[in-house]
Image (cartoon, rainbow, N blue to C red; front, side, top):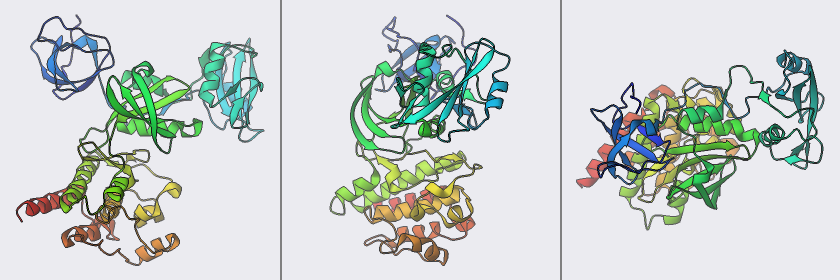
Length: 450
């Protein structure tokens, strides 16, 4: 067996690259694709002590498993690294020089806005094939039709099918890394054959969210819609590889091996979104202790993001999910970015977004704190829509003049006071998530003694 150079620390997550049946009773058997957690380093660098998701422990061979790493922050990942966007015919031809039969790229069509062009080097010259949209599908010859560019490229890679040559080698856009390669390298690529999709349970920004089963465990599966959302899909998955906390929905992996189906696989949250949970159970079922615990759960997840320099940008009760055992976890990291990144404000939910984020695109942990104040109001109003009886167009002008929502019926004054602190117009005057979590814990301790 090969020697592991740098021992992994206890708590390191890894994924099995091979099946292991175990040689002794002290070994931990596992199957390829199974997730394991390192418990301890042994004196023999070729073996670790580990446990599986069921909590069973034992020894595992180090060279049978791969460490799961966060995909590098700032990595320019692309599902379509051969897509060069808006470049001219002449620029495409320069990129495909020197000639190499089968070298190709895809660009946006300059003559037909909305269409694409496939540029292929073939026997010393470059052929340009117009890709047209027809009835929501893409086609070159109006015989073979595709849902997206990835399917089209896959087809002509396997078969020239009327082109001058099959597509043999992609001309990568400078600075990009193929997402498929990076997810595989960092241990996050799952096999489609290990996933069974059962039923649709919701709709998201990318497409349907489905209930699935991965190696006997229930999972939630986000299915990508089309090329337009491909990059957003990658951005969310990239962020999720870097996050590990009990109050954040955990990524299990991504499936990018099949160009026709792209999936984000996460832990399954049996009780759905917090806003639906609050509305369906209501005051008669959920007591103050439960509402406080949900608030505390979210504050802990957000404190972790704060400590790791991530800004969520879309915190709301609809983006918090509830597990089978009533733990609230923050989800939907589609807009989550490192604190320094800028943001297009056109997609932002006005009632949840801080004034400075809407007005000046200034996003920070403190803009998340504003949203947390709105989320607290949602929790204590049992899922009501914020700013009731105020027209959407009037919300921002009123808020900027200092308007704050009234406390929900039955909301403890101490919690309403926290909401108002979150809604300070001066972002610097708002509390941190650490301070919010400490105050909520203090409230919980006081509740236990009264």
